[in-house]
Image (tube, rainbow, N blue to C red; front, side):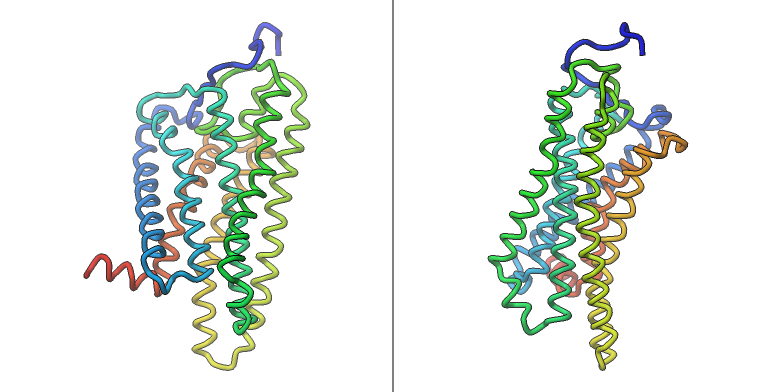
Length: 312
C-alpha cells in the first residue's frame, strides 16, 4: 500500500458501509431486520416481566433465562439502531471511540451469553442427574455468583481488544469498514502495521471461551441423555427431553451461526463479502429473536402465564 494512501494518526471518524455489494437494496433489507428487532425486544421484555412477576418462576433455570433475555436485549440494541441508521438514513459515520465501544460491547455480550448457556446446561445436568441435590447446589447465592462470574470473565477477555487497537496503531490504510457494525477483525484490518498480535488475541479469546463452554455443555448433555435413557417411565423420559429440547435448539443456533461468522471472516476469502456480512448481521439478531419464542413455546410455565396475562 503506497504511503500516500495511509491516514496519519488515529482517525476521529470511521465509515461503516453496511453490506458491501447490497448498498442499493439495504433499505429493503432493513425492513425484516427491524421487524426481527421489534419482536426480539417485545419477546425478551415479556419474558423478563413474566419471570419477575410469577413467583413460581423464581428458580435457577428461569433466573438464568432472565439473564439470557437481558443479554439479548443489550446485544441487539448495541447493533440494530446504528445498522438501521445506515440502511435507511445513510448514517454511515461513527466516531472511532464509539466504534471501539460498540465492538467491546458486542463481543462482551456474546461472551456473557455463552457463559449463561453453559450455566443453564450445568443447571439442567444437576436437575436431571442429581434432582435431590439440585436445590442445595443451585442456590440463589450461587446463581448470583455465576452471573457475576460470566460478566467478569467477559470483561477480562474482551476489554484488551479495543486497547490493543487504540494504542498499538497510529496509521490506517483506510477509514472505511466493510461491515454493518464494528467487529474486531473488520476494524483491525484497517490498520497499517503488524496485526498479528491482534489476530492471535482474537483467535485466543474466541477459542478459549467457545471451546471451554462447548466442551462442558456437550459433557453435560451426554450425561443428561444417559440418565434420561435409563429412566423406567416413558412419561418421565418425555418430560426430561421436553425440558432439554429448547436448550439444545438455543445452543445450536447460537454456536453454529457464531462459528460460521467467525471462520468466514478469517478464512473465507472465497466467500463473497455480502454473504459473510449479511449472515454476520443476521447472527446478531437470530439469538435475541428466537430465544423468547423457543422458550415461550417449549416451557409450559411461561406459556401458561403469558396466556393468563394476555387473556385475563
